[in-house]
Image 1 (cartoon, rainbow, N blue to C red):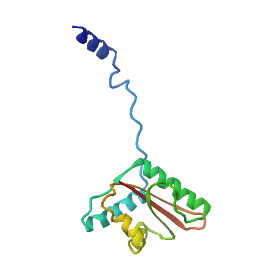
Image 2 (image 1 turned 90 degrees about the vertical axis):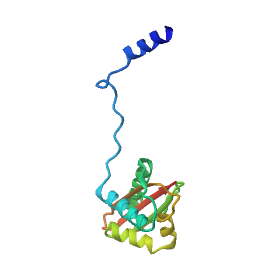
Image 3 (image 1 turned 45 degrees about the vertical axis):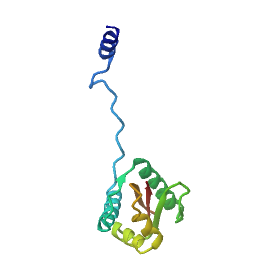
Image 4 (image 1 turned 30 degrees about the vertical axis):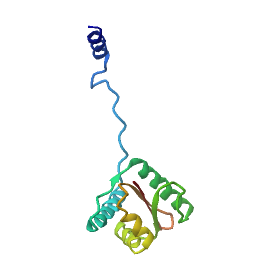
Length: 138
């Protein structure tokens, strides 16, 4: 009986769907970010690997790092505890992915079967150079 009264009280005081606070929306992907992830997943599929899923924390991390490289004109890896591929100068997502596939260390990151999450970004510097960053985690 007491449990029924407590449950009735909780239900009576619960917010309805209209007054509930909505969950924060995930950040929107830019087309170049989506393209970079799609091309990476296509390469993985050709090698029999599962697609990577977007991780919003990795996306923010990749954006921050790509933005820093762009501002500083400095191609340098982040100190974050992630697997990371970076590049500079490629003019398309296809060129960036192909460059990484031609590099043994970057290729190993892209084809690592233990990775399941990804975040990616690219920014263009004032001199026209594009800085690319893709990060992976298990």
